[in-house]
Every structure is written in structure tokens, then in C-alpha cells.
Image (cartoon, rainbow, N blue to C red; front, side, top):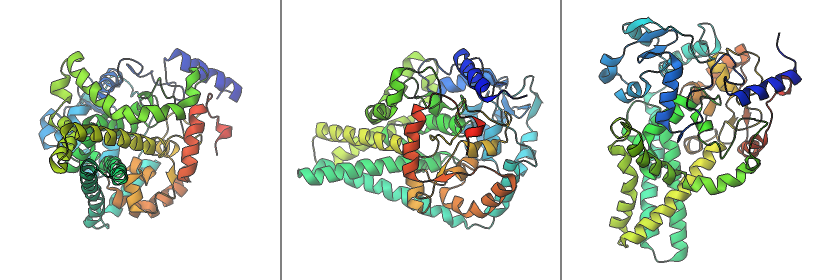
Length: 454
């Protein structure tokens, strides 16, 4: 028998203090290493490997597979398998492989059954919402022209060209107003390049995913924190994009929080501009304090972020000092814009699930959970440019992350039909409401009860 609502609030409060299990999913152990160290992607992978029972192999559902000999033949690129070795990749396998023949291929690498239950609450029943939708989407994709993705390519390439042009002008001009206009334009276009590059980071290895590194970020880190963590375990305790901001910003509802948690919207204004530089410095520090980091997680692509100031110096005729100072202003402003867009995009609103909220099913269909943890914005989804630069079509993107954003809009008829059939909670609002909702979420001190959900 489910506890009565006052009892649930007390139980949830106790679970959050004890940190032995998830609050909403008490059958799951509290994620290892979640609250320790620098909360970097490599630490997240290490902690998850401790909890997944994959025994150094790759786990899908309750079976273990040895994909070592397949790494170089993996159509998505070897990096995905390198990053996920030793993990339960059930959610990633299901969401990233729409072709039914992939399951038959996976069976060739079977080693043995797993010895422990999955440390994930999500199910993928054959007649459930997500698998039913996936089958329909796979058939629908066959009718959509392959050329659709060129719309996305034109947007991100155009933004990159704009960033390069205005960053040069910002260094070159001596006119204050023209310089300010160029600096702001370069910052905005750089931020939009990063947001748009997110579309390509989910896909097989491609050159446009490297655009993400132009502002000192790491696409490889993002493949862990965003693709393998946030997308697959959205707003649960395994979501690194939630835990990574603690103890500065708290998005999960908790009774006992530091006094400054109520001022998250103010903290964001001071924190967001410096995240790009801090993350880059953190990666450099990890080279010296974490054995194997340089070889396993640091690569030539980490130098891409240093190409922009060199470009500005060579093309503007300014001094190197002036180019570097202008570049730092652009990078910090772009960092602020990216994180402001991201934090107000789709996941932080009182109507959206957070760990601690009361749930009707502690073993939900993965697709149904994604709908509970995401909210779309009607005033963003009406333009492909806005979709690419403000994380649009976010619900469909979470369900099918490898599908290009330009294709997602064609899937709505099938998606809405299945939402109605399964009574899935597809939520739509406005960008303004999402912004206000994010503020309200950071102020929440207790979970949402079932009776309070709308």
C-alpha cells in the first residue's frame, strides 16, 4: 500500500538525508561518487561502473556483451563504446538504435547473464509506449527525404562563419559602438554554434561536433555528461547535469538546503560566465591528479578552443594581447548565454519530474519518464533556426537523440497519436513560463505529490 501524502513527504525527506537510495525510486542504490571530487564526466563513468554490474563488459538489460572486437567497426564511431565500457548501456542502446536488426547483431557478442539486477528504474516492454513509438518512427523515417538534414548543416555553418567574421571585426575596429556590436554578435553566434553543435554530438562521429570545443568546452565530456547521463537518466540522481551544479545550484527539491540556495537565479548571473574557462582549467588539472586522464580522455580536439584567439590575431591586425582579451570577453559572454539558454530550455519547472517527487510507478517505461522530465516550448518549435539555437523539439529529441533536429518536426503526427493512445504526459508551454518555472524550481523545498500534478 502506498504511503499517505504526509507520510510520503517524511519518507522522502529521510531518504534524501540518508543518501542510501534514490528518493523517487527507493529500489535503486544512491549513485557511487555522486557527491565527491570534481564531479567530472570521468568520475561519473567510474561511479556508474561500480553500480551497474557490467563486470568490465557492456550490459544491455540483463545480459553482458563483449564488444571489444567491434569497437573499430561500430557505425557510430569507436568513442561511444570506449566511453561506455563497463557500464549498463540499456537506455543508450534502446534510444540510439532504431533499426530492429541491431538487436540481432548484438546477440553475436553475448557472453553471459548479469549477476545483479539493473540499477535503473526504467523498462522497455515490447508493447510499452517507447518501443511501440520506436517501431512507428523507424517506419516513418523511411518516408522523410535524406536532404532534410542539410537545413541543420546550413544553420550551424552559417553561425560559425558569422562568429569568425564578427570576432575579427571586434578586434580590428577602433570605433567603440561598432566594436561593441561586433563583440556581442560574435558572442551570441559562438553561443548558438555550441547549442547547434549539440545536434551533432549525439550522432556518429562527424566534424561538426568539434564546433562545440570552440568556446573551451569538450564535446567528449559532453557526450558523457549530456548524452550518457542527462539524456538517459533525466532529472534522476544519475543526471550529471543536475549534480554537477551542486552545491551552488540545487534543482532537486530538498528540505535541508543551504540558505543561499534560494538565490540561485542571482548565483547563475555570476557563475555562468566563467563555466567555460573553469571547465577547461579543470580538465588541465585532471591531467596531473587523475592517472590515465591524459591518455584516455584528453585529445587533440581540446586545442580547438585556442584556435579562435589565433584567428582573431591573424585576421584583425591587432596586438596579440588585445586579441586574447577580446576573445576572453567573447568566451565568457558566450558561456553565459549557453548556460542561460540551457537552464531555461526544458527541464526545470515545477510541473517537471525531479528526484524526490512522488511517482505512481517506480518502474516506469523509459519513454514515459522522459515525457515527465521534459517540457516543450511552442514559441521555440515554430522555427527551425530557433529549434537549433534554443534546444527545440526537446521531447522528441530526448526520445530519439540521434535523429537530426530538422527531421524531428516530421515525427509529430505519429508521436501525438501514440501519446494519446498511452496517455503520455506531453507538456507544452512558453519560453517565458519556462524561465519563471526555473526560478520556482530552485525555490522548491519539498517534493511534488501525485495529487498536485497536473
